[in-house]
Image (cartoon, helix red, strand yellow):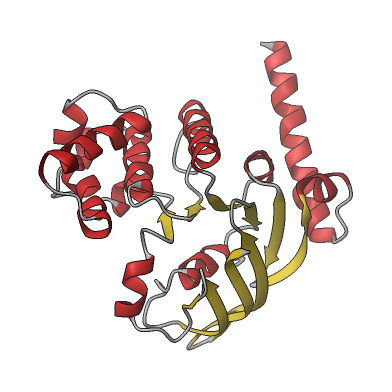
Length: 265
């Protein structure tokens, strides 16, 4: 059964179509990668999936999120889906988090709104959420986002996204703004939590090497169009389209360069 079913999705601005006739599905518990270079339409697709496109952009086609039609739905209809059904972890946590609200209160909000927790049970769940993402010290709940490192802020964003136990987690370039060491820790955290909870994952990135680690199947976007899709093994070993071959070759070249650099260190 699909938790997400996207069919002939297009996104139009005043100057033309930015996403054109995109179709894919994500089954319950499946991990799908959406990859492409900057401007390929992958982030716009993720916003369309959750009904978060700005008013200047108009979607068409069909997006079924756990059986609920997103395209054309009012925000009041979609709000209950954002949390228990699907939630997004964005690229830059400093802009995604509320700078004027302590971390503990931001995690408490979805727990209160979607799960109805109050009092001691709410406080206990906030502590458990922070502990789950590796932030077990009490000071983290009292901190403001600017008082944390980039990796810690992204862990907080993950805790907020998972608080209402969504069926689908959408990770939109979640480690691009982090250094390599912190990136590895955050990816390992996402891998573990997705596996432990049995969630579906839509992982969005320009980095094929990162995506191939996180997912089972890949959809490749270029200029708003799907150019190729398939299992990770098939796409990495036998890419069909020239654009996909270029992405695969670039990832291999980078791996070879890093291996040579480490060998010479």
